[in-house]
Structures are given as C-alpha cells and as structure tokens.
Amino acid sequence: MAQRIDVKDLNIYYGDFRAVGDVEMSVEPRSVTAFIGPSGCGKSTFLRTLNRMHEVIPGARVEGRVEIDGVDLYAPDVDPVAVRRQVGMVFQRPNPFPTMSIAENVLAGVRLNNRRMSKGDAQDLVEESLRGANLWNEVKDRLDRPGSGLSGGQQQRLCIARAIAVKPQVLLMDEPCSALDPISTLAIEDLIAELKTDYTIVIVTHNMQQAARVSDRTAFFNLAGQGQPGQLVEIDDTSVIFSAPREQATEDYISGRFG
Ligand SMILES: Nc1ncnc2c1ncn2[C@@H]1O[C@H](COP(=O)(O)OP(=O)(O)OP(=O)(O)O)[C@@H](O)[C@H]1O
Ligand SMILES: [Mg+2]
Image (cartoon, rainbow, N blue to C red):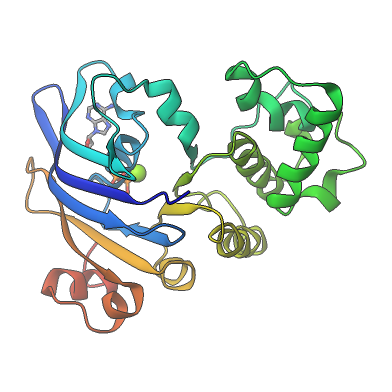
C-alpha cells in the first residue's frame, strides 16, 4: 500500500466564494506533513477536501484533482463514503460518542461501514486499535465504561483509535492537540511519530514547535488579502521551512512577525 497524495490545480469554493486557490502539492507515503498559516487562510477547508468532507456543506465544491496513489478522489465513479474510509479524520475537539462505551467507540466507524464481525474479532480489533493509539494500558480494565469518562487527552487518543480501527491509509488531523494539556500533547505527538510507519499523516497546527517536532514536511498557507482566496505559499522539508524558507511571508510568519 503506497498512500501517496497528489493535489493538482485545486480550487475550493463555498458557493461563489473561492476560499482556497490553485493548490499544487504532493505528500509522500508514510510521512507527516504539517499545515501552518494564519487563521482563515483555508487550512481546515483544504484538509477536508482530502477526504471529501468539504462537500457535505451545502453549496461547497471543488475544482481540480486530489489523487491518492494516482486515483482521483473526485472522479465520477468514486464513492465518497469509501474515500472517507480510506482517509480518516481526527478533529480539534475530542468527540467520542458520550453514551457509548470505550470499546463501542473504537468500533463505531467500523460498524457504520457495515462490516459484520464476530465478537472475538471485535475484541481483537478493539485491543489492536487501542494499542495503536497508545491507550490500551490505561483503559483495558474499563472497556465497557463510557468514553466520556476519560480525560481530554485520553478521549483524543480514543478518537484516533476509532479512526485507525477502520484501517485507513491516510490520517488527517485538524489541530488535534489544541484542546489538550502539554503532557497529553506530547503523548499525541509521540503517537504521530509511531503511526507514521503505517500511515500518511497530514496535521494542521498553530503550534510552530509542534510542526517542527512532528513533521517531515511543512506547508505554509497565507491570504493575499481580505476576501482573496487562501493560497499555498510554499511547501518544503520542515527543517528548510524553519531555517531558510524561500518566501519572505513564510519567514515573517514563523518568526512571529504576523499571524
Ligand atoms: N462552512 C463555511 N461556509 C462558508 N465559508 C466558510 C465555511 N467554513 C469556512 N469558511 C471560510 O473559508 C475560509 C477558510 O476557512 P478555514 O476554516 O478553512 O480556515 P483555517 O485556516 O482553518 O482557519 P483557523 O486557523 O482559524 O482554523 C474563511 O474565509 C472562512 O470564513
Ligand atoms: Mg481551521
């Protein structure tokens, strides 16, 4: 399984408003790419086009191509539900289903996808996914208790377990640590470093140190002006973006001169 992403000439709209313009980008398999840039430049919007979550908003649409291993996600014969199974997503606020147990939360995505499985297989998948999310040891004695009883950082790892239980190829994370304390943040960052061996990961973050710590590549997005579409200013190895970016706007942003 490769899991390479190629974005070609992508324009993203909300009705008549072009929110993001002319993005070209490639993401290598089994790497971590960080999206950084000021609020409103379209990081979340762009991220959601990578698993066809954007179009669930009425009037929202894209022009251009998003290819995973050469297959255009927006081709007419592609099923968006299959795309979302292939490209998982973790949101800013941990959002476990509050009335479901920890185990049922892990299985929620799998059940949505209608996969029938035996009780033993389900138990194995719960353990495997929770181990993958570095949460197993903390919850293995209370799998039947509500997911809402966990700490914020544990809930976020539960959401990651839920995302990886469906065995996606790509994992999208939109500011996954912004609601977390520093210890939980480090736990998620460690986890991202481990998950990279199996998944292609794209993470939006406002935290420069986090981008520098977890990512191989960093993409800087910016707005040319009020009402203008957000654009990709540059993407490069993270070490380059944070030491010798090509564009002045990137330098200004990472050194805190604006944004
Ligand atoms: N559902 C929506 N309907 C219409 N416009 C939207 C919608 N969601 C976002 N936008 C607009 O699209 C642009 C990009 O927003 P987006 O949320 O992608 O930015 P962002 O870079 O993720 O910002 P932040 O760092 O604050 O999360 C903004 O102008 C925003 O107002
Ligand atoms: Mg956002």
